[in-house]
Length: 233
Image (cartoon, rainbow, N blue to C red; front, side, top):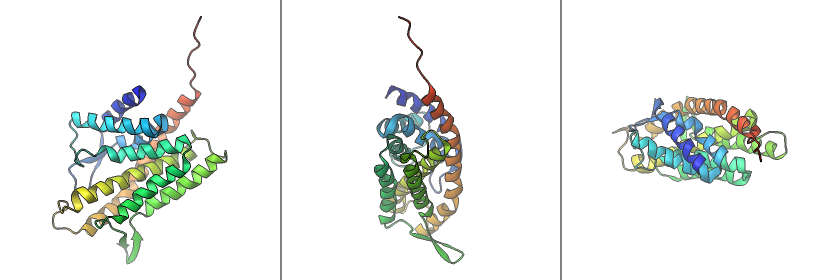
């Protein structure tokens, strides 16, 4: 928990580096979203989740605006929990968590099941489902010894699925806090809101996956090879 708290301080500082604005919400996506899954990889689902809660409230103290009635920590907490379950070897739970989040999103009357793309209805959650499928393959290969947990071909799918779990959690919070209350996007329709998000989120999530993998692989490898110095008796 002490190490997770120290990570939270780094995470909070990264939360002050904006990448892009949230659509229709007075806040922004930051570099902290790129390292939230790493918290789970390092400290497990419990320690990683705790680190995200602490880090988010540190961010509030540093002046970051509250977006989701103080529940902002849920976004990165779910990313950390998903990654933590993967690294604990809890493979079924690691797939069940993001799957349940997708179901919860679609169950809301304020969600969008499809977005029209050149006359073709495309599922809004196509990338979320893809990330779960990619993670399932990676977990199976890792279980069979064909992938190492510290290797990029395992870390990248975990990072991908974890950041998508965070994204869909943010979508659920947006539905119940803003869209259902009619306080977002003024007179624009709910479908118009999700259509805008649909075209923006793939590039955003792929960027976070790339940066997160680039940071996480050397950190995990360094820690896995580290040995404490021998004591002199």
